[in-house]
Amino acid sequence: MFNFFKKKTPAPSGESVSDSPRKNWFAQLRKGLSRTGKNITTLFTGTQIDDALYEELESALLMSDAGVGATSYVLEHLKDKVKTTQATDPIQVKKLLEEVLTNLFLTLQKNLSIGQHHPTVIMVAGVNGAGKTTSIGKLTKHLSDSGTSVLLAAADTFRAAAREQLLVWADRNRVDIVSQADGDPAAVSFDAVSAGKARGRDVVIVDTAGRLPSQLHLMDELKKIKRVVQKADNTSPHEIILVIDGNTGQNALSQVKIFDEYLGLTGLIVTKLDGTAKGGVLAAIALWGLERIKNGGQSIPVYFIGVGEKLEDLQSFDAQEFAQALLDS
Image (cartoon, rainbow, N blue to C red; front, side, top):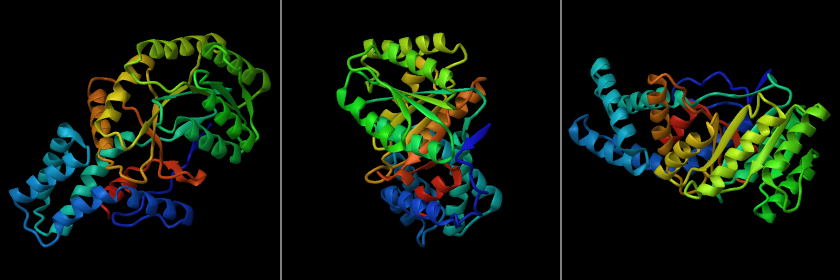
């Protein structure tokens, strides 16, 4: 059994990773979240640690799409740390804020594990435009490059372009694909899992049709795909991943909640953190995960985040890196 991608040892506070690909990717992430980073960083320039600072920080966090709950959580824990450490220097307080955010984001940090099941069946969902099929293509590339055999299922039969797009990724990555023009999504999924077992593939990735949570008939179709996949392999699907657009703010959290209610999510991929994304919604998702843990459940980790169109722009989520990028540290 192995993990994707195996993380480095966390860098000391204030330092970023030294390996070139990850360092370049981190620079892109900082640039993508610069809108939030600059808003927060300016608050710690030659200021006093008082109620006015906390009020301004509250506004900045709310503007970052963190939401009321996560904002209150962060401020409460920051004030506790400031009081405990007796910090008076603004730069020191900013470091304490980074620690609070890192600890919160650790709720979301977990590697995608492959190899416990043969094949590992991954079902991928998401709304239209979130970057679902592209993320599948990038993930397939990383898996294939590591020596993992992959079979794709083009179960997004509602949109011909999606099927064609996945065929291009299959050809580019030189992996097999199960596809039927105008076929039933559940039937395509069943055939793919059965073929994956028969051909000895390590991973089967099922691409489902993009849909809005309000489209109940399509959400029911997702539940049907899950049931049919289980008939092909009663231990599957082993991963149910939702792809969310990092630009959609609190709507992303709403999508996570609804898709989880329908499917029982095991992980997330957050895309498009390369432009106007604010990034704070991950704090809201992390807080929601903490509340689930307190109630005896589990958080839903962020397996990968994407910052661009290149293959290497999809990387594993690291709590400290994301906190640093969010604060422009």
